[in-house]
Length: 288
Image 1 (cartoon, rainbow, N blue to C red):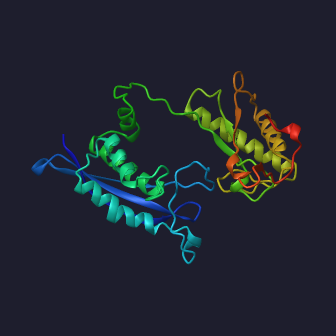
Image 2 (cartoon, helix red, strand yellow; image 1 turned 135 degrees about the vertical axis):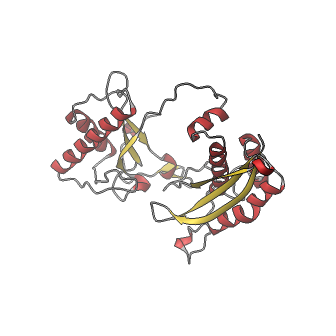
Image 3 (cartoon, rainbow, N blue to C red; image 1 turned 180 degrees about the vertical axis):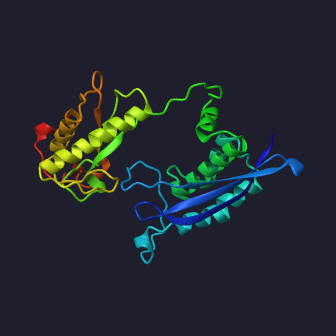
């Protein structure tokens, strides 16, 4: 069955942080002539508060008169007037994801997608993929399995959630250096149980923080953002919350583990080649 890209339309949208992001609608055709049918899909490109030094470039306008320079009109323009038309003119097969992504990468021509932006390219790639999944009558996760070479998977497994419950670093204005402190319900036997365990630990953490006179105000990603004396104190609070919720902490024999996203590149000063913490710590507290 033949597939073709009929249209790509992008526009600027405000995300959950109040910042502009790229929205893209892809229109894909299946079949030809009288049997031809069209399918559309829309995606909103995610954006983080912090970016690693080696990550692909997120294209922003840099115009300080709009959204503090965070507008994405350039990305929208590139999709509507460069990437979209190029894909259509070159008759790139939307059902061949490898060909599609390679075409976009070659068109950009840079290692870190700095010409058109990773957010621009992702918007096109993902919206087209979702439209093709619709055209094939497949849920998107099943289409992704097909793309990965596992078209006959009979049992799909959801990934174990890592629930962000304490925010620090770029995600809050508190004293914590590390960006995300997460509960991982490793002992759960289903997604329903994983969500329940995480929620119970989350509420136990809130109760513990209140008992210590600490703030339960939320940070950038919905986790608590109190002013702890140290990162270790935040971890201890999580361990107490796990126990208070009736669970055992631990990866192997426990119910709930703890995960960290330290966003270490945000702490690194490339000029001094030193890591700068909000609160200075002794050398013995750092691992080699």
